[in-house]
Image 1 (spheres, rainbow, N blue to C red):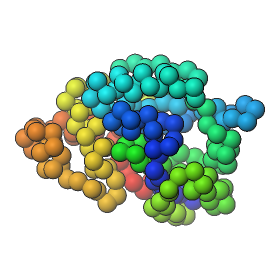
Image 2 (cartoon, helix red, strand yellow):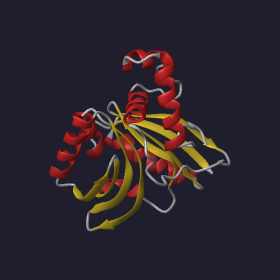
Image 3 (cartoon, one colour):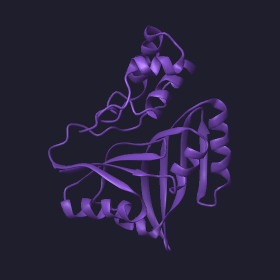
Image 4 (cartoon, rainbow, N blue to C red):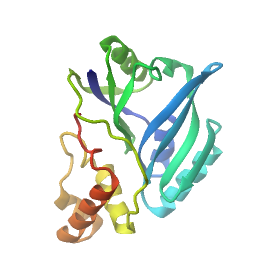
Length: 215
């Protein structure tokens, strides 16, 4: 399978813009999609990370958007249906797989995509290059080891959610990492050992396969 990871400025994208406006991060998946007239309808699911006040303002703005058809929230877990532009048709096709969750944080959206056909993968990437300032991290032909799937929203404590949100926000799970655990602990104003324990427990509960940059 051909596999690629891309990142792009999502400040003018639907979810990216609303997340940026309200200082939250999102980790999730498009679940299914179909064409309706000149629009692409996409069902999505994911987890919201951030301060409680910021998450509330994010949901308020989300509700006000005319491109949100439906959504519901259970704790930090979001399921919804959104409208995408028709130019996205080359991306939402039967040939494209989401190998890992989409991560939206600090105006940057990161996707890991796969396809059995290189030309289909290139066409999908070109959609984002037309719409956004896009960086291709890699394109490789390889056999994938796993595909990360959102299962059940785990029961994280408040401190574990804060630790995970901070790590995503500051690029801890990017490759190469933009920050280490010691700096994250200082940012959180917790001791290294306390912050490290919260972060590791959150990782164990939340998404054991989500942090592989390359499948």
